[in-house]
Every structure is written in C-alpha cells, then in structure tokens.
Length: 114
Ligand code: 5GP
Ligand code: ZN
Image 1 (spheres, protein in one colour):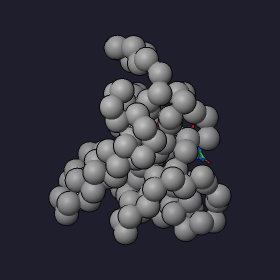
Image 2: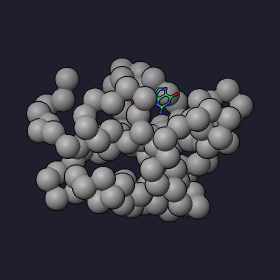
Image 3: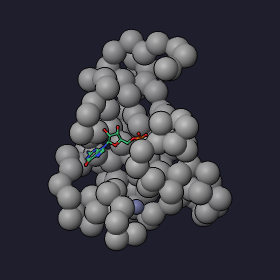
Image 4: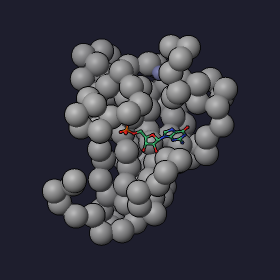
C-alpha cells in the first residue's frame, strides 16, 4: 500500500527505531510512547486491522503474537507483566490502518483501559 505509513516504515522510506525483526514481522518503538516500553509489532504484509489479519489465516497472526512475546522478553517486561493491544476500528482508537500490536510495559497498567 503506497500511502500506508507502516508499509513505508517496512520499506525503510520512513525511519523508525527498529527493535526486532523476523522474515514476516517488524517491531519498532512508538513515536509517542505511553509507557517506558511501548513497541509496535506489525506484519510486513499489509492488513488493515486484526480482523483482516485473522482472516488471512496463513499463520501470520501467530507470528505477530510470537514476535510480541519475543519483544517483551527482549525489553525485560515479560516477567513483570505487559499488555498487548490491538485497537481495531476507529471507535476503538485505531488511527493507523496497518494492523499493529502495541506492547506496553515497564509501569503499572490499570484496568479497564480508557
Ligand atoms: P493506533 O492509534 O492506530 O492504535 O496506534 C497508532 C500508533 O502509531 C500510535 O501509538 C502512534 O503514536 C504511532 N505512530 C504514528 N505515527 C508514527 C510514526 O511515524 N512512527 C512511529 N514509530 N509510530 C507512529
Ligand atoms: Zn500498510
């Protein structure tokens, strides 16, 4: 998708602080972090949201979740606890329509989220 911000990060057309990468996934720090650890994990392939990623049904959703956990371990937040958030749809606060998992940790996280 030529006009997609995260596809441009995958293509290295826009810089990002990449912290983890596999053949089909990429993880980079959120530009506006909401916690000491705030990393976005995306599939390199464009899918608009978590529903579309699940529909693809080719193991990619599984790879994104595995990458999310690997990032949490690498960032040192896996033991203390971390949150994986897929805002899905504008009503849930999704602003970038290339599916991404927010990995949040490094501070106490309240429930329910706002
Ligand atoms: P959403 O609101 O769609 O769930 O999350 C989009 C996230 O992307 C936001 O947390 C926002 O801070 C982050 N973001 C937006 N533009 C950029 C960018 O150019 N680079 C990076 N690293 N993060 C971005
Ligand atoms: Zn995209």
